[in-house]
Image (cartoon, rainbow, N blue to C red):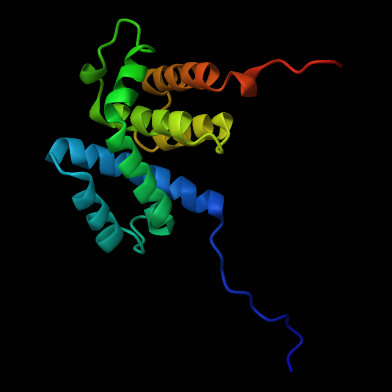
Length: 167
């Protein structure tokens, strides 16, 4: 018997695998739009060919396939509602004139804010702004998306943004 403790198998944390799923969702939504690809084709491609691989340290390899599939299907099923909701936060901008990657980030974040009440709004905002930095440098694009996602979170989740009472 050696003096070392037994090795524990590596376990991916749920938070990390959901972060990776969110990154993959944005990539898949972008790919679907540019290649005019349906969601099931994109799902199969990511699950069969992209997950489980290390691509330049890309977190896609650690994505939660089930969560990824739920997000992709949800965004596609509710895209009209999502796009209409987002259009209300864009002021003078037209949603279809935004960069395709920006649309993908905003759609995925909006879906989670609308349809995933168990996920705290602050987590959604933080996660998608982190995802955005994988595609855009800090600057106008990130600030723009931050404004849209934060406004939507405050409106859709007012109870999470209410000032604390007492004290």
